[in-house]
Image (cartoon, rainbow over all chains, first blue to last red; front, side):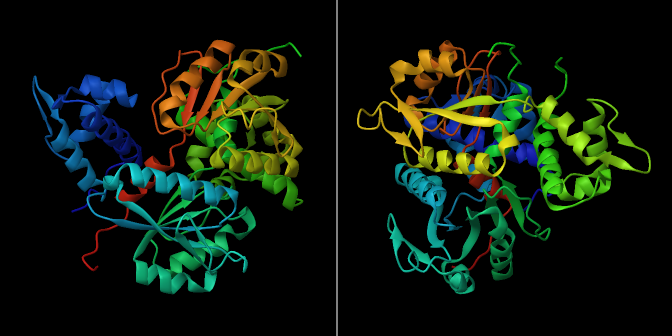
Length: 217
Length: 217
């Protein structure tokens, strides 16, 4: 079952709600949460919380709010996170290694995270055959076989800008369905492949807008 | 001059346009670009390009499009990127080091990037007094003095989730105005401080939504 008409702005907030529910499930005995409280913890207005969740079903009860365990399970199903999803990463430089460590730590802390980093890729012969935190590094020529064997659905791209499109094409051809792109370049991909861009430079430039000009210095 | 009513969705796209113009200025002799072409390169519809830019002035000419150098300069002014903006980073772990390298590389390639990483901070005594790629590492007790002396306006937070709020509070108290937060936690900050969250786990979870379920495996 898919909900194709729902905007990405809604989808973008679902993991925020899930994170709040994950935290609550760990830290407290509370069984229900109001849209007000969920909104405050997720940094979203309560009316928007109710509207977002209403796209997917009737999860709340008037006067009670949302049952935490139930809503958490439902959000996991909606986000395809109720079973293991295999992830790859290409570009084993300092950012790639940092993300590998970060990812494995996240996974170790919460097995229900379900996004499992299974393979790394690089073109550097000195890195191929090695491993980072136990995750093996393969060459670019191994992409088709590893995507198939390990069932990789998502790839994280941390290669330099000038190589990003070529590398993306290899993964797209191999059947990957999602790309998390850290390279500072707009990737071309068919409609069947979803691309999320995470460019630190762009985020910083956006932040700069909100920093008022001062005349000192 | 500020444009306070403009939504963050608009501001979020301005650096995308700027990146296209920066690339064009380097790679070609073309002097003008249509909203159509600018849209394709930025991954935004041409009508939205025109609407976004119209918030800030009349930059385009009917039948000619946008003059690249002029629009680039105007976008830099709007984004406060027409002069140097000092940035700090706290949390010199593997992600912090990777971002430092990435940032300095970006800056070395394009001096007009203007976001300058000037100080790193950590609580680890073995790191304080050292430097990463030439950028000095200070202790947390040096935050007030360094923010003032170096005129830091933005801080990148790459500390563990459980320390992120405490560290953010120190920078907020010291007068920082923007936070780029990599810690997987929602930070509380006053309205005068703008926070942008970049959580890799959230981005991956969002991507998972777009990966169709398969029954093999």
